[in-house]
Amino acid sequence: MWPFSSKHRNLKLGIDIGTATVKVVALSRGSKDGQFILENYGTVMSPWSLQNPNSPGQESPRLPDGEVIEMVKAVLAEMKAPYKAEAVFSIPVYSSFITEITLPPMSLSELNTAISDQAKQYVPISLSEVELDWQVISKQESPKAAPSVKAEGQEEAAEKLSPDSAKLAESEGLNVLLAAVPRETVQRSEYLAKEIGVKLTALEIETFGLVRSVVGRQRGAVCLVDMGARNTNITIVVDGFIRLNRNIDVGGDELTRVIAQSMGLTVRRAEEMKRLQGLKAEGGEHEIVAIMHPVLDKILVEVERVVNAYGTRHHQELSEVILIGGSAQLNGVVEYLSEKLRIPHRLGDPWQNVSYPPEMKPILTELAPTFATAIGLAMR
Image (cartoon, rainbow, N blue to C red):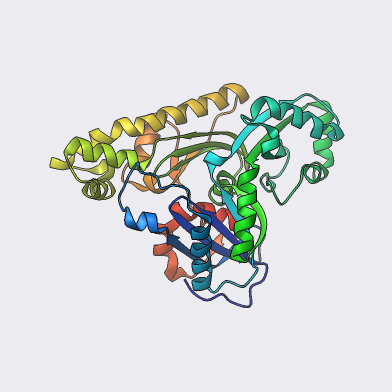
């Protein structure tokens, strides 16, 4: 981390609050559209994680509010962040609901009522307990900001539709991305922001931040696979819009666990072997490859299911699969999934539209998988 530069304005913080760590990225706007400047970044680990290192499968409880406040304050103080800086907070995937719904042709003035009625059929809890937002999606539109449960209301979203979109609404019907977040989650985030001393401009489901930083303005249909420690999030993105999303409880921790159990190793040693060898192990350690395949195949099956579901419904092939997350960085994982799915795979780079000192490249490349959400939040 380094002090903020006073010459940069329009600075925004992306604050990603997890169950074990808090990650903060500060970006300012660059001279070109869609370009950003890295002002600073920071992270802090919770006391629970520090006391329970290398504990796959043992998820810490939700961090107490007081602990989160102190953790974020500590990071911002070390970053020398300006007081009352604008910030966007993340909402965990497991605390949200995302789906695409199709509505028949109608005038835009009828959308609010129609969406509320449709939401009752899709959102698994009472609408009185959630904050609801939506976004009209179509191939003709350029990507806009993701649905936000705080920054933009439903009426504002309708007003931002272009004349072309209005014509589409009345002649062809609408595909709408629906997002719902428990009201308690929203209220908690507002409280945390107030106590931390930042200006909360939006709350955003972490998947949207990932899409913004990793996929960006890429045209066409791609599958974004975020392979984390405890779960894997699979998202179909078309022209910058999320079209399909699925989260499964399989991740890097399960890889470590099966290695430890099968080879009679400690969790620490199994984690070391996994990171060092991956799927490129040779000789006496080749056994580790066969042990990891069944776990990776669970992820592969779900990715294939999501890809096929989208293709069947929309009759559109995907151009590639973009991998992000710590487990995606393991030796040989990209090649293995690419060969099995027969779709080009590559690692995503959330720093691709961010300028930073050249000497920071090695460390930022290493941090990319864990900071991708925070980067995308700060880009909003």
